[in-house]
Image (cartoon, rainbow over all chains, first blue to last red; front, side, top):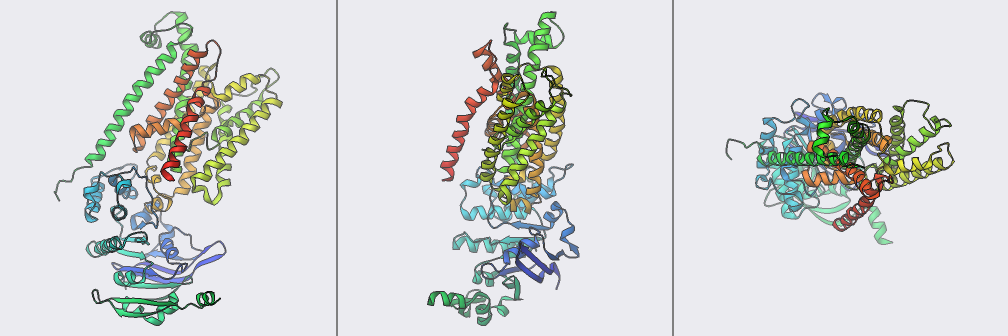
Length: 271
Length: 349
């Protein structure tokens, strides 16, 4: 497997609490990898550690052969784009101004603005379908439009790898599909490596080329969605008894939750 | 999609408009400065002032303009401008229009630094036993200690603007109390003089002091223009800014240091002129919008206009009594601050 990112024996701690313990993981190049798991499993922490937002206690993350610990901030930002979980920008900023910020890591003292920058922002806005909004203020956009604009900013960064931390959390169902379709299209057409954190298991199964299950700060299983979406494994990872059927439209596994089967939950409801 | 990609026509237009606005503000600043020099016990025509500045005029006129009035206006321009740029930087990196050197305790800290300096290094006849050059250094030390205290007290939540502001106000209050105690019990004999300086006054300034501020400011402004290029990502949240390659927590420390230095330079000689660092950058952003370089220049010019104007107002209204210019900026600035607070309450609530 050609790995865009490899994570080796990565341990991350918040103070005394260990968030990730000795994770080993390869992110395949040019694929959509989805990190999934219950609340507090460490999936967002792993994504953030891949983008060096957390200093690991031990272990390392490599881009190809390059350890990320040796890269400068701007260098790293030219390799990995990141859509934050709750990104925020001023309401009176225009769409184009925001997308333009994606070019920040490419600009230097000697070359503050180049034709390549202009081309990249036009292409990013075109690719995400927000060109017609370029002069609109962010405060005047709908949630779905706004998310597209943020993706455009990340796209303008022209990185090989794009990380998205729960990009559809606060979106309506239509916008969720819209957003993830867009992400997958960017992956297919622009051959970007995509790493996604998703809360919704069925969305994860639908969009992932490769699925990674985390639980308690460790990788429990990884593989193609059809391999991973077994009733026993889902019960083990998510603490839920379920049926898994095949989605008749996309022919991906679909989980139908039945009841919470975690011992703690049963103890609480019994009491 | 057409092949010829327009080169950011909309944004280029925004930038052009911003610089045009800056040019208009610059003209206004020159006019206010000429009025500042022209007004006094005798009115001197602005055209005559320009002639005198260019080397003409009688001996008497030259003394009045060059020795008495010009230094006062010059220090008001430099101090008002420095204060305003300091406020611009602070508002930008905290993403909060309520942030300013006054609110974050920087003015209070710088003031305390100067008073301690005067107390320790003045002799019985109230003359300094060391060079005046050290006065802004003392102000910088005070300002840096204050902003560091605010930063440390805010702790992990230093990125939360509200906490920063609350601790800033608290630290500022402590510094003012300390200043007051030193003025009452310390060996500063001319208390009235010191209190007027603390309220922010630009009278009794000589060219030597102007020179010290000008050199310090030139150095600080080189730093400002060096960080200006890295300011745009600060409009984003911390994680997104990091995502495009700016380590905001580290950068914020650098900018805070620079803002403290600017404020200290102003406070060292013009005293604790309040609210210019709040109002000028806010107005600048209203006028020129988001572009950083025009924003910085417009802030400087508006700050200069405000302090020269405030000094002009106290001279017109209260002459021959010397009332500190800072009282005018406070009288105008306090309601302005409250207006911003109330407006925020409405939009955020």
